[in-house]
Length: 476
Image (tube, rainbow, N blue to C red; front, side, top):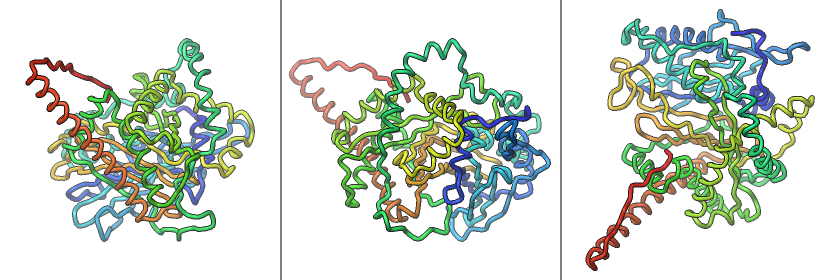
């Protein structure tokens, strides 16, 4: 890794917004049927992190370079064994001070049904896609260590000399000039988001605080089965929208319904989603785990949530505009500008304003290119099968909920990380339940519409009229 490697503006943002009561760390939990071998996994962890230097780095600072990364390959990544009383139990995690230690922690959690592997990574070190790359390497190395993978199977080639380019997003001066007019037009979104305060999901009165939960992270999960997942994909294709558009629409409606059920009246407040965007290009194919993302905001007032079809089409149009104009890069550009003014980033992040109502992150399909064998679509290492994968995004002050969506083994997983100081466990479960019910309602309405279409076709046929259909396609 080239040294000294300075932090990018996004990494500076992740570091500056880190605090002990709101750690800027994310989690990946791998749930296995069958037991993992501690020693074999420990060796795999130490080898895998040498391929991804930022995962075993800490931050130093001096007057000449500012904040920069320091990597020591002799440092062992903290790896502990944890015995859980029940399945789905998280080990007691905590704050990672990236100026004092490396940004990765790993636990092997044993329970009656098998083993879980829990990986905690500071967000300044890597985004979720980077963590997926690390997980793929880790599982391949573990399989090799336990004799379930031939030693001639090669890991994906990485070039850590490219780490200084992780902030370029495949941009050239020509591409920047081409995007400039659209970026200028998109500045209105940045200005409006800055001027408008988002509505926090917090349900408590201003002076009311729930007792701090001893469990970190506090999570709820829902695992969508394959037939329903296939139905969601089919419905998105039929409506010519993306799955992300469909789920974002249903999440808006779910949050509004949940807030109404809990007596929140917010006609003039804006519900705002913080939505990370993967900015990797083909040039990043050999890049190790890092942050190569931008972000956009998606917001609506309650008055804009009354018609589900209109809401969906508005989300589709807005997200298409963001993609065409690469509006997420405006977020990165703003961080570049803020970095030029001393102490401004700290002021912006600690001014006590709700930046987003929640985080909504869609990772797409994960572990789809692994070289490991599969059983019923699930990654397997001998008799040990990776049954489920959970992603947990960090929370921020006044952003009391972070939703992550991804697909593994042709099934969607919906995860909710909630702030127990603002939302109780019961309320969090209810919120996720409302979201799931909204998704199922979308599929039910689609079935009813198809039935009505068939009835209409039969009626036209009975009257000697022709019913013409054409295949519909859409982005997934």
